[in-house]
Amino acid sequence: MARVAGMDAAQPARPQDSAPVGGPNGSIDAPIEAPIDGPVDVGDEDLAQLASLARDLAVEAGHLIVAQRPRELRVDTKSSGTDVVTSMDAAAETLLRQRLAQVRPGDAVFGEEGGAQAGTGAITWVLDPIDGTVNYLYGIPEYALSVAAVVGDPRIDGAWWPVAGAVAHPSAGLVYSAWRGGRAYVQAVDPAHPSASPASPASPAADEPVPAGARLHVSAADSLEFALLGTGFGYLPEVRRRQAHLLLDILPRVRDIRRAGSAALDLCAVAAGRLDAYYEKGVHAWDYAAGWLLVTEAGGLVTGIADDAPGDGGVAAGGPGVHGELRALIRELGAG
Image (cartoon, rainbow, N blue to C red; front, side, top):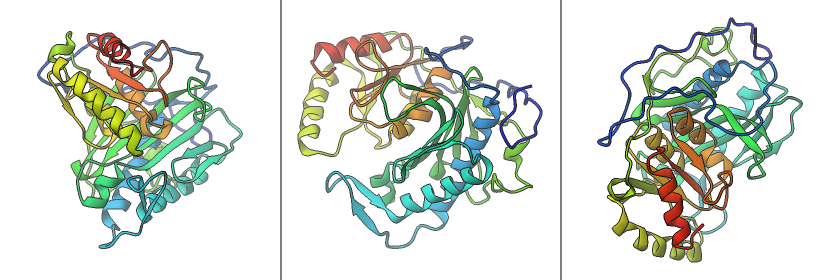
C-alpha cells in the first residue's frame, strides 16, 4: 500500500461526490483518468495524503496572514514599484517551510520568497505564500495561498508536473484541493479555527483523507464568443502596455474579461466553472502549480500557447470546448 514518508496511514477513500460547482455555461462531468500528460513517477507516495497536507498547510498559513496582519504592513518591492512583497508574505512562507521540514524533511521546496531548497526525494513543494499581494495590501479579498507537490524541476518550464495541491482563499473561507487522478474539490473552512498544525500528533493531516466537499467541474462552454475570460497583468510598464493592447483585440471576441489579481484564484474559478477560460503570460510556477492541477482534475486543459507546457511564455486554461479556440486566438494576435 502506498504511503507518505513519515505517515503511517491507510489508503484514504476518495471523497464522496456532491453537487458540482459551475457557472452559467453548465459544467463538464466526465471521468478524469490521467489529465496531465508526461512521465510522472512518484514512487510509493500517497497522493491523497499529499493533497491533505497541502490543504492543511494552506489553511493554516491563510489563518496566519488574516489573524496576524498588522495595521501597517512593511512593504518592499521586487522587479518594479508595482511588484510588492509584504512582511506577511515572508512570514507565511517561513511557516510553510517550517511545517514541511517537520513532516516531510526529505522533500525539496521552491517558494516565491525563499527560492529553492534541495531535497532527497521525488517531491518538490512549490509555495506561493500570498498570491495577490497587492490585493492583500489594499484589503481587497481576492488573495490566496498556493501549496503544490510536484515532480521534476519547477524552475524549468516543461520539466515538472503537479501531483497534489491546494489553494486557500482565506477571506472567502474556502480551500480548493486536488490530486492526480483524484478529481478536484472545494470545501468551506472556518478561518478563525484552522485545523491543528500538520506537525502536531493531534493533526488530522497525517491520518485523514481530504474530506468531502463540492466536486469541481469546468464550464461546458463551447464557443469563445460566449466565454468569460480571466487574465492578469505583469509588473513592468512595457509588459503591461503589450497586455493591454492584446486585451483590446480580445475583448470584442469574448463575452467579457475579468481581472481579479490572483492567478491561483483565476484557475480555481476556471476549475469551478465561474470562468470559462484564463490566459496570462509571465507567470511563475508558484502562481499556477496548484491551479494547474485543479483545472485538469476538474476536466479542463492547461497548456502553453503553442504545443508546449504552461510556463513563462503563457498559461492557457479552460474547458475542452474553448481551450483550443483561446490558444488559436492568442497565436493569431501574435501574443503566443
